[in-house]
Length: 214
Image 1 (cartoon, rainbow, N blue to C red):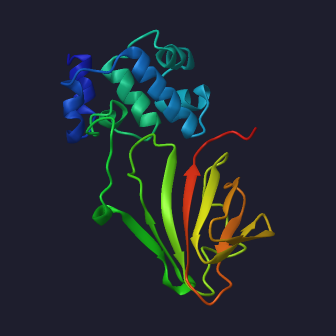
Image 2 (tube, rainbow, N blue to C red; image 1 turned 135 degrees about the horizontal axis):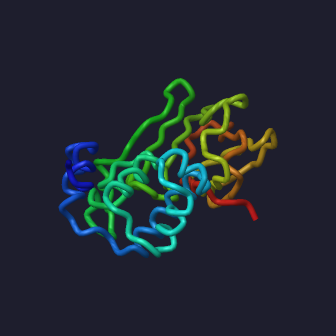
């Protein structure tokens, strides 16, 4: 009969093989990470238990750092969080500092709406905030009034207008913004930015995921 470690390796991707060979984080560190990832995903202990097959009491012990899960249990928790085991153990990361080079930024937008953006932060597991820069052409918009919210429940967004003038339409209410103005709002409400002027407008946006309203 294969050992627990062998069984875990058999059920993980090739990139996770190193997880069984590397030293696992301290229980308190891993527990705090599991809790942060669970909460940022909007999951309760019962939700994660149902998704992972690990009991809620065991998950609670792991999050408190009272126990160090076996690789099999850790792999199940990772699966419940939609992560690979190596991501949960942070073996995919180079350390505490992540640098995103300008040439490697994620870029996108909608040419028809005159919207371009680039994400300035790295897409690492468990990151609770994302920074992006947006450019709106004259008459452009980031979306339409009837577009559904694009951010998870509890998200908050802060936008800083760098150049030009914008109108934020949030939950049907317009807010006029000029260069230097900064606005924070509930990003899980229907919202979009418009550029009603004849010049380009740029703004920075930070979306913090899974934050409960006060």
